Image (cartoon, rainbow, N blue to C red):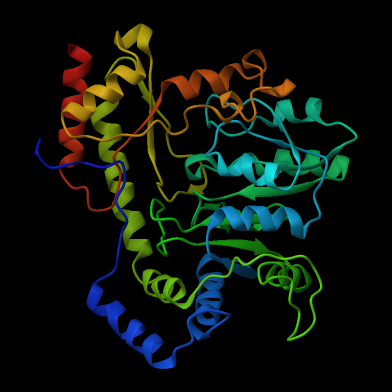
Length: 372
């Protein structure tokens, strides 16, 4: 087992022989992009699968985030979390929007609604929360604040494919939600992403923006970009829909195996399932408390590599601590105590649907490292 590399994740791919007929058809049609038939089929089937009204497919999740902000004409300042992948905040920067960071909740690692209101200024136009690791943010509290101040809410739901709260898709909350279908995600189309909207007019605006602003053959209605999903990605997405529920169930079993093996290890903590939530089990993060364990998270991270186990420090460094953003007033560590603690302790252990008994190997080596 030691000589076999254990990555933090591994994409689930359907049987190759089932994908080949899609490729042969695309080769025959020679329609590779620009709203081809697989693109259209995938949008329809994906919306049905997720239980949402409108989906606009994108070549990747970052372009979806950037376009969502354009679609809602967001400007000025946006309140967001520092505990996420950098694309969340980069999307604001690319739109010349100032990110305003607030701290996170210790029991979910999501943006703390109790800290949002104090960060609102006359320049605030939106809130950009993240469903971190696919765990739903406090959507009801956030929406109440947004309604009181006339703000949009755009959810970075990159980790939250198929997640439901009280039986309703988490993607139905807020003004817009953004998905990622990157290779590291539960549901992948190689690269890819989507924006979920709630009315036809907004979908049409988004679709125009992602196609250079074209609203017809010679009509350009906005300064759009090229962010279209191609036929290869869409065809893979269609095929993936056949298997994603099975893959999520396998990830649930792996997650529970980790929890059972780790629950009595002093200094190692993890999140439990949220009540009334159907999870997708995107990641398995643990916190390494060095005062109890006797080793820092970084020491554990490096030692695991000696056993060919490649975990990831999602999300480290904290976005507010990287050079681009650390000069912002709201990026000061004293304003973000919980986020800084979590970023310095978090370690995502390997999790994918086909990991099998490698879970036991990972935990055995983690225990061995901590004992030393």
